[in-house]
Image (cartoon, rainbow, N blue to C red; front, side, top):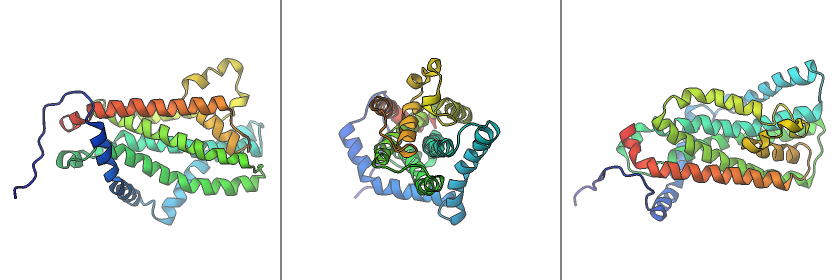
Amino acid sequence: MSAPQQVYEPFRAGLPPLRKYWKSLWSRRTFISEYSRSELREQHFDSIFGQLWLILNPLLLSGVYFLLIVIIGGSGGAIRYGHLTASLFLFYLVSNSLSGGVKSVTAGQRLILNTAFPRMMLPISATVIAFFKFIPTLFVFLIMRTVLGLPFGWEMLWSIPIILIALIFSLGVAILISTINVYFRDIASFLPYLIRTLLYLSPILYEASSLKPELRVLEYFNPLFPILDSWSISVVHAQTPNLSSMLAASGWALGVLLIGTYFFLSREREFAVRL
């Protein structure tokens, strides 16, 4: 029996057979999980100090902002610090997906050139890695909010769909930026500035309710705004998030995922040439 051959046809923009593609992608879900775990082990996140750094990094950053805003600025208290920390934890889920997704395709050059598989596995793995990094921070925040004396309530269960929305959005931006980086490699160098800009324009250092009315326009142009606002209301204040914010967050997440997926699939067959 002759060995199977892979035929490379001339590139033509367009979507592949979607049913066959999703079936092939689903059949490789175990590989995605193991690939993500291997990447985490390579970054030493399977060790105690690696896990500790996942928590210390956003905690130290929130401590710096707490020093500037609460102690030096003299505004806020336990709720302000709880909001700052909780928002940073969720923000790191998105930023880690961006940082890992931007080079997921270009870093997998040898794998792409030598193996036939759905390339979308690579940005998906980057998002899975970001989610694995996010999980330990949830337990730390539960302990922290208990120490701070923040209220508990059934409304905190709204955090589950909010995390799901944030995960969908993170996957969408990882897929989108991984495609863009194939054509414009400088986007990886620009990404830290983009993440920092999102940090300052999102309700992290401040609560959405304290924003001046003339600045509320940020809510309509920043996709992270309704996600982080709903997150803070749920896990910090133990209240039900606004329906409008939840709908806006869901719309942004699904919209970015659909746009990123279409862009990725329509250009995927050209990746081998571009790399």
